Each structure stands twice: as C-alpha cells, then as structure tokens.
Image (cartoon, rainbow, N blue to C red; front, side, top):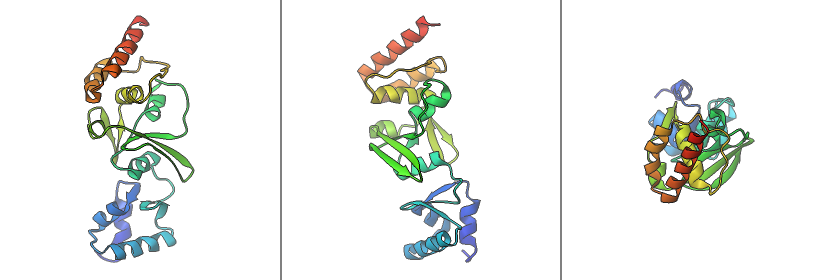
Length: 194
C-alpha cells in the first residue's frame, strides 16, 4: 500500500468506528508497531478521532450504536434502546443498551453505554437480529424478550407494535420456562385488550 492510501482506505470504508484490528485488516498490515505509529500520526493531525483505547472514528460524527457494539465483542444493540423508538415503552433513556457477555456501564465521549450480560448461546444466535450497516440490532420482538429475560418485573406501555408470531418464534432460544409463562401472560393481556 502506498503512503497516502492508508488514510484513504479508512475514509472510504462504510464503517464510522474502527478497532485497531479493523484498521490493520484494512491496511493488510503485519507490522503492528508501524500501524500504531501511523494511527497516532493521523490522530495528531486530526485525520482520525480517538474514542477510547483501541477504538477510533473517522470524525466526531460517528455512529454511537456502532461504537456500542465494538467496545465489547460480541454485542448488539437491544433492550430499551429498541423498545422506546418502537413505541413499546414510553420512558426516554439517554444511554444506549447493549446485549453482551458481561454487565458494565461505560461513559465514552459523554455517552453512557449500558452492557447487560446474556448467555453466550443467546448472544451468538442471530434469530431476531437485524443488520444495520456494520453492526447488529435486536428486532423489537427480541428486545422485548430480552427485557423479560433480564428483569423479574417490567412494565410495558404498549404491546400492540409487537408481531406475536415473531415473539413466539424467537422465544425458544432463551430455553427458560418461567420466561415462557411470563410471555404467555403478556400475550393474553394483549389479546384481552384488543
């Protein structure tokens, strides 16, 4: 790769957020020290934006949900971040909720990222996940199920946006009897209010 092509390769990518690994794969770089030096040079010149250790963006207009899925991998955007815009919950949350292999809360560039631990078998199952460019988000049905999976009692404001056949198709991946009973209760409640 020629000297000027390194930055151009990043800027032409569809991604807005890059891990160090993403960059060395884009550059096909085997010399990690040279890659770090080059990245630091681009950061000092303002050509790349440093987000946190090992994570970079093209500029300050990066996709925050894309960043959310790169902090801890594997991960996908889910829970209240999906349910609010879908009209299932009316409470506004400024933080971004992510399903991951651990539970953590991180502040990065003024944005709070709330990671919630989900079993690996569920986390790596793509049923009910939708690709959004360079990362995945849960469908409203999967986000609904994950809120039930992670919370004993939860109040949903509006169940009408849910496609119940999709809910029952995704439900078996959780392999949880109590959760299945709770989902059936919500379904009966929704049916009685139709």
